[in-house]
Length: 443
Ligand SMILES: Cc1ncc(COP(=O)(O)O)c(C=O)c1O
Image (cartoon, rainbow, N blue to C red; front, side, top):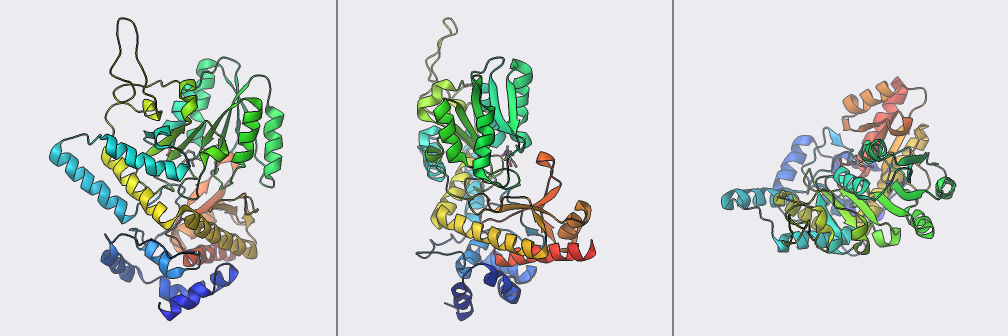
């Protein structure tokens, strides 16, 4: 191993690693031109499996991970919560499948492809392949649940004030159409226990469903397992919006205890854009009506005279008609890529970058909105600079520090969110912090 890499890995992670990041910039952050040629050289080469006991300080391996993506240095992409870039392996799979599709003029809708990709999805979510339905995005999964739940006028759904618009409108539409009642609480950023208390306080005899987000838009990791226990105790249907979790970390829907869980394929799972996954627990399929149905959702046995039809006995009942198979083949390659690194390794890496970033923000005196407790934050961090306008902070980060970032307005916040995923590194953390320092000095 190159001695410089060895020293860097041996130095470990945390504050020391970040302090040393500037010195390493030359080494790990070559100019855009050099980076581009390096990327061209490795493009197409599959990422090797990691060494045993991979740690977040293993710079050479994480650089190989970064070089597996067409991400640029300028601007630097730190907005995975918006959209995830796909690794070359996935892009190549997508392109190959599109070529094959056009050559054959075939739907490519095969049981083998469907099941092999769903088996990988099951490993990312902690469920069986036949509990997964393909969707176009997390919002479609949310709509399937919000519209499929048998709710009557006056039935209550408990949710939070920090939901993404995608997990809001479908429920509001149901409120308008069917008169359900949406009850909200504002999540505490200080304590998971407090959040359980706030949910408990809203439960009544009419509570039919919980609707919470696994990782919220501001990067809060909700106590989803404890919420699952509360739901089970009261016999309440439990839906989780997981748009921001699978791929960032290992997810175990059984441990969460939810009935359904929707996610995007194009965020942390790094899949082609326009992909999503919906988990519906096998023994609850019949509780969740399939409102949109057609070929693939039902068996061939149906009658227009008697009204008889039979939904198939898996979550595929929520799919219908021709689906863009190359997109899902690409998603399969992205999940395979993440599973090869190991979702535990990805999570340790992402979390370490987030911790280093939070330490740096604290030193600068920024106000961190995402919970500080290590068990309650994800690798998306939302913050503000008191005394500096949002417009100035945003402008400096985008134009001077050359970052792709997202503003956060959900829940009444006016703040900036930075996301770190497998292709980011400690140098990226330093580049963002340098931008925040500049904004503070000039704001
Ligand atoms: C928490 C949350 N839920 C839902 C969505 C919607 O995801 P999609 O665009 O895949 O429907 C997002 C997107 O950012 C999100 O952050």
